[in-house]
Each structure stands twice: as C-alpha cells, then as structure tokens.
Length: 318
Image (cartoon, rainbow, N blue to C red; front, side, top):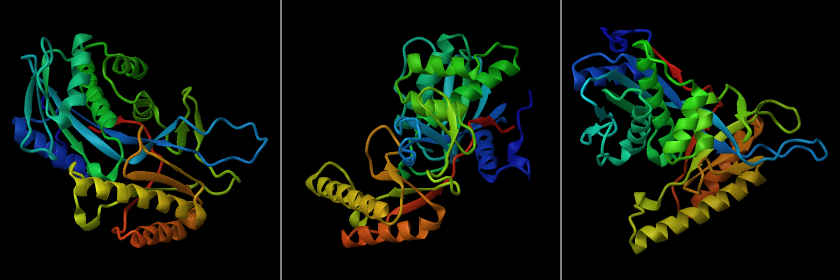
C-alpha cells in the first residue's frame, strides 16, 4: 500500500498534516492509518432540583474537543518503533512479543496496549507508530488513556485493512481493561463518547444540560501555576510551592462557586493542579475574574484557563 498522504492534503487538519510529515520523516514512508482520540475527563454534573429523580452526580465522564493523534504503518519484524513530536530524543524500538522492554515513560501505556493486542493476535508482526499529544501535561487533562486508545485503534484498523478480524470497540475496551492498568471510565469516554453527552457509570448517556433547563453549561479547566515558574521537584521549596498551589486552587474553587459556577471536579481520578468548573454561560466572565483574583491574592500567577466543549469519540482521519 502507498499509505495515507495527509502531509500534502491541503484540506487536512494542520496538526494531522504535521503528524503525517513527522511519520514520513522518521520512517521514510507514509502512514497507513491516522486516528485522533479525544482527551477524556471526569465531571460532576450540576445538582438538579430536589425530588426530580435524577441519577447520582458521581462517576460521569465525557470527551473534550482537544485530541491526541496516532499514525501507524505495519512492520514484519515483530518490533514496535515509536516516536513523538513532544519527545524527539526518546524514540524507542520495543518487542511486541516475548519479554517486554523498558519503554520511555510517554510510550509505556501505548506499548502495553499494543502488547495486549499482539497477545490476542492483532498486529504482532510489528508497527511504526507516531503519537502526538496536542496539550502540554501541565494543563492537567489525563493523556494516557487517549494515547493508548489512539494507538490501539490505529493498529486495529490496519489489521482490518489487511483482511484481519479485529475486535469491535466494546471488545477492545474489555481487552484493555483486563490487561492494561488505567482508568476504564476514561477509556469508555475516549471510545464511546458523543457530542454534547455525558457517559454514566452504567454506560448510558445523557445530554450535558443546566439544572434549570437553560442553555448548555460552559466548561472551564483551571490549572494553577507555580510562583515564579518554580518546580515541584521534591525539595522543600518545591513542596512549599505545591502546598501553596493546592491552597490557592481550593480558594479559587470556593470563589468560583460563589461567582456562579455550579460544580467543580477533578478531571482525572486523583486531585491535581487542575480543576474543571461547570457554570452558566452568562457567568463565565465573572467566574474567570473570581479565579484570577483568588490566585493573585495568594501571590500566584493567573492560572491557565481552557474552555472545553463536550465532543465525540475517537475516529479515523485518513
């Protein structure tokens, strides 16, 4: 096969064109499949009026309109060659069968996912893989699940193109859950999300809506920044900066709720430097101002503020 020439397709997404160009530069051929997968996040829906019989507010997930991408082409030597524009000095050559090798931290989860596929007879002959994460880690949206799902879907699609019988998405989700440690709820969002919909713990969907039936809520991801661009590097100064950041973020959340936000939740499984705020659209400016003012009072820089919309699941782009 000649592969997918996204790099020279004028109508393609510029990020995908760059990914395809990077793949061709690294492996001297075009990718045979290109996929993008959404960042996924946990969310606490706004409280509904009492006595409405609504579902619990915990355990919901959704997909963001920010995405990772994977480009892949098959090999015939049983090796995974992987690279990323974010980690140009950490390319790796890793066996898909037999004893596992030490993968770079950024590639560990995609490598585990592809070894699980290889053990199931899918893509075990090897692959060239290029992965692109469009948001920096400091933003706070979990990236491991989108990357592993993008890599797995790309390899599965190439397997199907060559006459194989790949698993459907539900089977792929079960395979990853059984073999690769991670957040299964976020994987479900990456694989099954729908635009404007939240996924419940039981797999059902419901629209993201205001408790009073008003316009669709706005989502704002707030990521605290360390003072003077300090580093949380384990020493006393780093720990002090981390404590200060956590305190300022808690205060900012309190101020945001007071300014009209409906709810606040950690986007990942555990607390971090980012929090997701849900609010009426008309209160967005007031919430932003309240968050910024809270951080200034704590002598922290104004936090990163990222608007998010609830998007669709992973899809093939070639």
